[in-house]
Image (cartoon, rainbow, N blue to C red; front, side, top):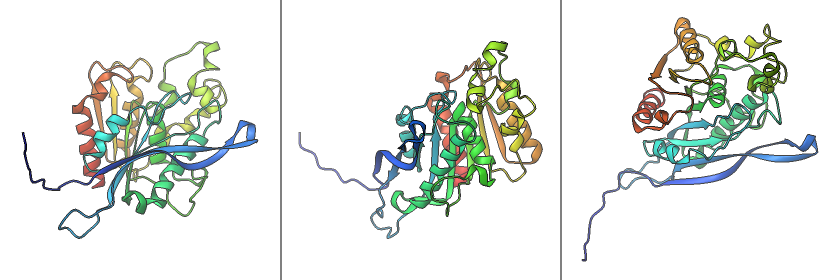
Length: 288
């Protein structure tokens, strides 16, 4: 069969680039250097026929979870690609884990990624005034801290002439208040994910721990938040996400909480199209 069709061009062509080095850091006890990398899915910077203009797109930065112990920036590229097709540049950045560094360095790494995206907005067709952040679990914590923390200690790194601030945040089951995390035995406390991340026993330093929790960085001028949390989360209890929601709401910030019925930690329910449509709608409303 032979057939000829006329195709109307209404969408850009999206390109995926993996392994982009956005920040070089110390490695192997300070003797060597290594690159922190990100993946980016972006529309080619070409005008659609007949438009004569080149559109800049809002950008969403994804942060993988893994208890601050492990992460894989490329694990969810198929979902991030579907989000990109809804009208976003989508990036996924790696950060150093707790076997390499301690708080607040992973936050600095993510803010460096935000600044890199702004510095290279022209290359990737990004509207540098419209950058959001999204992450799961430990990545949800880092997303919240990236959105809420604006003091200089969190902005160490390259591209210092650019802002590390974001304009919206979507946090999946974030450990937003360490005091609400599950109880450990005395022996477990010293090697809990929170303690390894902080570089000290999180339970023993209970009077200092609130100073690193997202709930204690909330202000009225926080960017819009969408919080996703399962009501049967066995790793980061639902009250952690609820506490961040309550604190933001009390401060007068723009915040929504999506409670997913019967969902455990990193549950398959979070990867259904219905949920990703809600996420896309949130970022379209807040960034577009």
